[in-house]
Length: 538
Image (cartoon, rainbow, N blue to C red; front, side):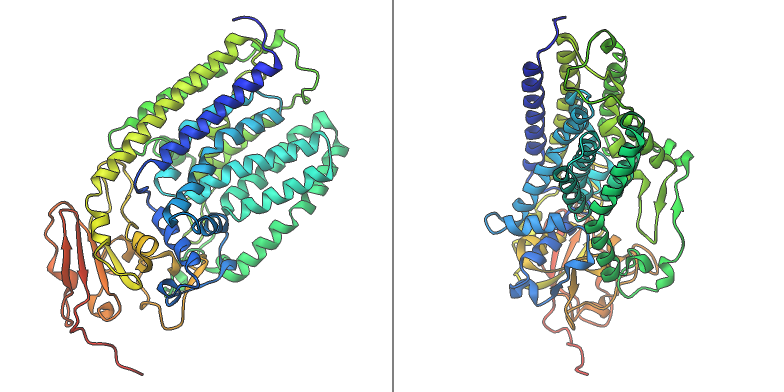
């Protein structure tokens, strides 16, 4: 076991194990009936409206304006594959492929820098963290793309070629249209990585890389300009339709390092009520410490003849991401959190604190065993909890089966929470009506200026006050006024605590209340009362 590895043995075992890790992640994501992640149903609803842009079921309500958004890659991928798969499965395919690709992308970045590619196994556990529970899947899917971009730029720095430069430009553009925060991480990482590599490759090479990098950024910059112009993001951020612009006023808000340190567990693995995330966090920490303790074993071995020059670029990336998490911007005009998401990238790359090389068989296979054990334990925990949420949700699909396509549904989350995670997992679950049945579901991201769909003229509900998506009684200024919307919505889907008695004020007012057409312990579905007065024609 102390013998040195051949390049062939190292390559075969490394990429085989990373491929198996990708398949295991994809399986965990594919297995549940639905993924009950906070914002994920909203992305499904938007993807459905884009895919159904020529179908009256959706097109009577929505127009598609792709220039307003930079989440397009997920939506367009889903649109293409929804021609051969049900839409939710097409979106799940995207999620499984790109989140599953994370260990492979991290491993490739490590390989380009001359570090053990097997360190990509360390990224398994951090995939299922805060960003995952909140359903920020476009962001998470942008990270393997960002790692590939950093790898392409490192290749160009080592051996400049226009082919590599064009590849970097294409990857950066795709990354931007996957998620702007992932793209921001790629842009910052490109600068940090280039500066860290400059001492070994020379300042002339640095000037070349910066100059070519700026040229390669032109398509992305054009995309940013189009997005800013179409969405009005710089002025209003995430301000919903019909609200006072002053509510989105204010400059960039910076993170408080004391808070980011205090809540580091909550911002990473602490997503489950039973604290099973704490066990994953402990094992992950021991894994990183174990790998880091091996640093120095490579000093008695020679680097392969074709290995790139050793630089401190990977360590510089880790430190920069940690600094961005601790001290970076936290919010901008209702868009938050920003810095919190950087902890994902930090955790993906932190195994690089281990040896520069794993020259012996015992070190190579020992790291594989250690990282695989932690990763498989984490995957098993997440698989069980996602299955538990499938069971906890109750007769949700049965409620949707009572609805007809092409109608308008309002979701009332009297109970947004779950006994599984500590996030409001069912906040936007009503969007499954828009994606799985077809029609308009509200509250929806079409209310936001950054969405690639907008209401057609005359098809929009009256503007909502901020906060109504959290429930009809979320606050005195955010209450849902039934009389104001009684003539608009065809269905009202209520998520409640098991057998909770519904408050009389839910449908209080002068208009007759809707008719109950389905009831289960967690779900109640109402249909518009035929005697509701239609609005006067102007």
